Image (tube, rainbow, N blue to C red; front, side):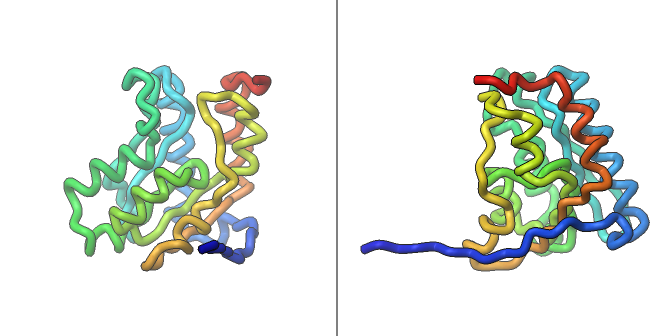
Length: 181
């Protein structure tokens, strides 16, 4: 039996003016977390978890390098592991993760199973691919988080990208990746 899964979605750039005032501050903090992660020897990625009023509940940078090459130590997955030990699924659905980039399939799955209600991200996967090239430390999938969530049984609101902040995020990646195989 052949099964075909097809999802139609609209890609559009978002503007910071569409967000609540505190959300721009949170996205800028995410870029700082990315810089901190890079300074600690990890890949320049990060995220944070906040409530609806903009209170930061948790922050997390990538830890793949400092965890001995643990390929699952993406910031979003690590944050979801921590958050799921503190917040029940009902509480998680009321929270928002702010992330540097559209999350990979693994991290999106962690958000889905953790019952996160909303994710806001800065950089689309297509722009991330331009930054990382063919560097095997960050192989990309052409699989946006909205497509992963569309295959699920429950909703999760996803907002992004926000091109106004992409240059600040991209600056952290300059010279970091080996773009040629």
